Length: 423
Ligand code: AMP
Ligand code: GLY
Image 1 (tube, rainbow, N blue to C red):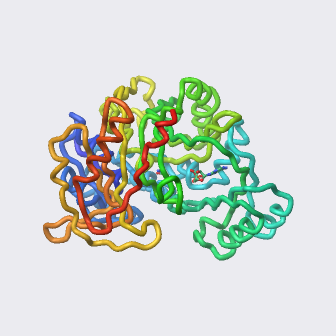
Image 2 (tube, rainbow, N blue to C red):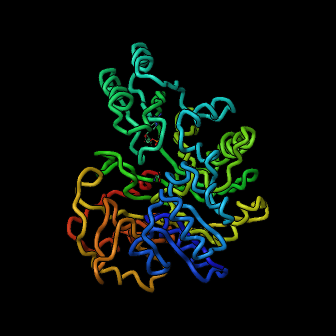
């Protein structure tokens, strides 16, 4: 069969690699793709938000199955457009993608259905939000309601910081229309774990756990990024935590969406915080994490098409989801200066070192062809990933492999997975 993937980052490269392994697939298309994905898929440089051009491309190539990678097109209803044109498409429709697309929606959903999360209030004007801060306790967390490239969350230690934050989100529109509404929520403490799942709207199957490193600098310093590295599984995701979440979070979320008439088919990514009062939901995403996909998908034993098709068809129940009993670590190679200001267009050398090695992967996040050279084309450039028998071995292998590739302004964190030493 023929499969089309929408997106062009490391997550979509990991999805493409999993699709490539499927014995059922003989051709992959990817829009826009990147220089890494181009090795295994036919790529066409179409923006993920240009639904008309994406669908027109699909009509030309006639894929049997379409997979949507990123959040923005999902929230804007790309699945509905592909379905209208008759394509079998993996991902939530617009009315369900709101689970990620509006934090105010997701908080209200959790409150209504008793899903554990931080206490909060929603605001649709700055005056009310500022008044609320008068009697609040600090630190406090401000969240722009809409999608903001993972950057719309401000942790404010003092009232002054929070006042500035409300003004910059709601009045100065630092995150654009994402800041038309604001969630102000209780500050929680604890370890963070990412748990990804497949759901067909009724049944939910949990994937192996992972942990991201969102800050740009070693020791969790610096600005928030899209993610500087991941490991999987998380040793902090114990059986006890799993049991709690299965009883109080996962199925409840799927059922809540169905009860609201917003049947969710696709990936639900649960961003959890393991607080002293038990696991709570920090956020939902309506798609694979990036770079969580890069450590979770290489460990999945199932044929990804079987699983995704079962989600669309509504018979996920019959799938026995299985992961390898090993570990993976992904270290993001970024451009110095990311996430603020950085140069692009530098030649990437050494990519051939990854060829023919089963345990090593070099997922491209931001790369493109410049003639016959491959050059950097983003803040996050490559997700260097290794599998090992355990987390320590995977981490050593991943860091060794970061030396195999070079480009000017190469930057990485040196402590990805360091937390596992405390487990
Ligand atoms: P989110 O996009 O909602 O996952 O938030 C981004 C990051 O902000 C999370 O990964 C946490 O590190 C942090 N964060 C979000 N909400 C809270 C909260 N209520 N308490 C403490 N930290 C938070
Ligand atoms: N790695 C976090 C995310 O994809 O949102």
